[in-house]
Each structure stands twice: as C-alpha cells, then as structure tokens.
Amino acid sequence: MTPLIPMADKPILTISDMSITFSSPDEADIEAVRQVDLTLTPGKTLALVGESGCGKSVTARAVLRLLDKNAEIRRGSILFEPEGEAATDIVKLKPDSLPLRAIRGNQISMIFQEPMSSLSPVHTVGDQIDEMVIIHEGLKSKQARERTVALLDQVGIPGARERADAYPFQLSGDCGSAP
Ligand SMILES: Nc1ncnc2c1ncn2[C@@H]1O[C@H](COP(=O)(O)OP(=O)(O)OP(=O)(O)O)[C@@H](O)[C@H]1O
Ligand SMILES: [Mg+2]
Image (cartoon, rainbow, N blue to C red; front, side):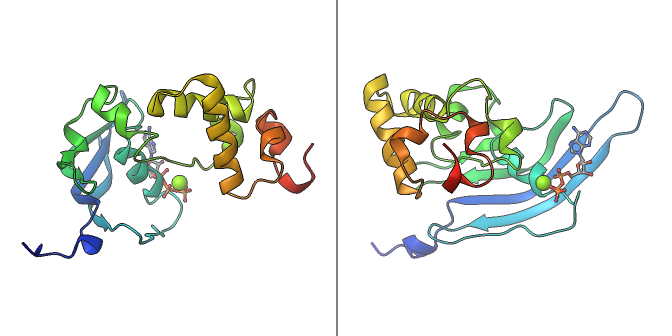
C-alpha cells in the first residue's frame, strides 16, 4: 500500500500547541512559551530563530524533558515517531522514566550552549562519550572506546584517539592547536 505521506516527508517530531509555564513562590505563574507548533522531518534542518529570551532553549529542553523543576508543560504534545516505531508523546513520559532515558542521548541528543559548563571538567571527553555508548549500545569499555574514537574521527577531530584522553578544557577554543 502506498503511504498517504511519502516516508521522507513524514515528520519524526511534531510539537503541537505546546505551552510551558514557570512558577515561583513569590510571583504569579508565567507562561513563558505559548502555543508552539513545529515539525521536524528526517534529512531536513530546522532552525529556531528569535530574540534572546524568547524560548528557544526552553522549547528544545522540553523535547528531552530537561526543564527546570519549576517548569511545567501545561498544554500540548511532543510526538516522537521514528520510522517503523510507534509514536510516543514525550509530554506523557516521566522525566526519569526508562522510555525517556532510552530516547535521550540516543535517538534525540542536545548540544548545550556552553560546553565548558555542561561537560564534566574532571572526566576526559573520551570517558564522557564512552559512557553514552556503554549505556545506549551495551558495549564493553574497550569496544566503547573504539566507537568513541570512530565518532570523534567522523566529525573531523584530528588525532581522535589521543584527543579522547583530553579533558574538555584542553579542547576548548582552537582544537587544532590543543595538545
Ligand atoms: N527556571 C526558570 N524560571 C523562570 N523563568 C525561566 C526559567 N528558565 C527560563 N526562563 C525564562 O524563559 C524564557 C525563555 O528562555 P530561553 O532560555 O528559552 O530563551 P532563549 O530563546 O534560548 O534565549 P537565548 O537566545 O538567550 O539563548 C526567558 O524569559 C527565561 O528568563
Ligand atoms: Mg538559548
């Protein structure tokens, strides 16, 4: 049977009518993100553009349920529908639940705005990437390191094997001249 929507155009992520409210002990609740609608299609790039504070990061964090404790998605849905899998409404998952942890860092990842504060300064970058592939791909530590090196290589990091042993501060700024 021919699908009504060609597979390539079928959204993998659909945010509908999503609103996020922040509460504080002293002030009235603030609906900081209001009625967001967007779709992401495989193979396409979507950029959220807007002035500082308009809600780009909060919207992205909502997709991984990494919002601050005083935030609540009060309306809407975030439908995640990878090809061949049933649709999941991420809003309905508990932030620390297994189904969400299986998606986070595996099927959907986030590169944070400030790597110096989002990466652990006391672990090498290799250890931090190893951890992800150990958790999500079930690899043992030696295999995980091979995978990490391949991933670093794939994104064009020169001397990937040596760089995996570096700490984040050793890679900041100009990677080309880092030790
Ligand atoms: N925990 C919180 N409590 C209250 N308000 C918050 C909280 N986190 C974010 N906000 C507010 O939500 C709004 C959207 O913030 P957000 O970080 O998404 O902006 P942004 O579009 O990513 O900005 P920038 O371009 O500066 O990164 C801002 O007004 C911000 O102050
Ligand atoms: Mg931001």
